[in-house]
Image (cartoon, rainbow, N blue to C red; front, side, top):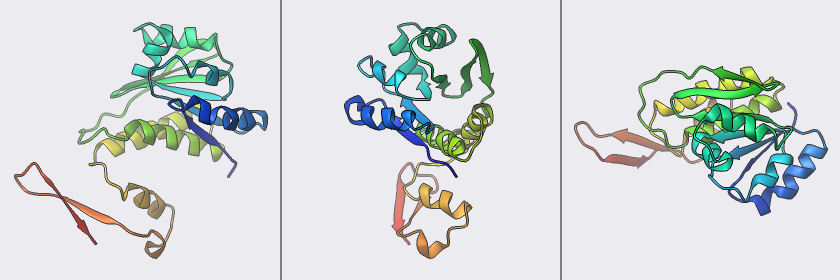
Length: 190
């Protein structure tokens, strides 16, 4: 496995040096451009990959047309640029051509953390040597799968289990159960 860096555009002052140093070393550096803001635009030149949320891209580019917005942003950076848009396809640019990765259709239970799942899995796949298109497809699948479940703290432990990490190394876990015919959620220590 190679190295990779993921940074959030919510804290441009904090991540600026890290992104610049990683990019200078040829380390894949992914910017999670989820927050709709313009003060982080300098980060676009300090990363190898920028994955926007639709809201973040619209605010940054100043247009509602996501394809046009990606083209406009690509003039400000040499980075790979893409945008996630909830249940819609992921859009990205390939040598100036607009492309799309189909979204997975699932029965949505909870979308909290779907964007973070996409960004994290995309970055991990780059670190493992995967190219962008299959990495986005894998990330889209992971994000869709996440949406079929209620967010829970133990999700990270579940991901580690899938990679062969023994239960005893997973640490504290909580079990979340939906109560039949009730809207509340019961959290139990296990």
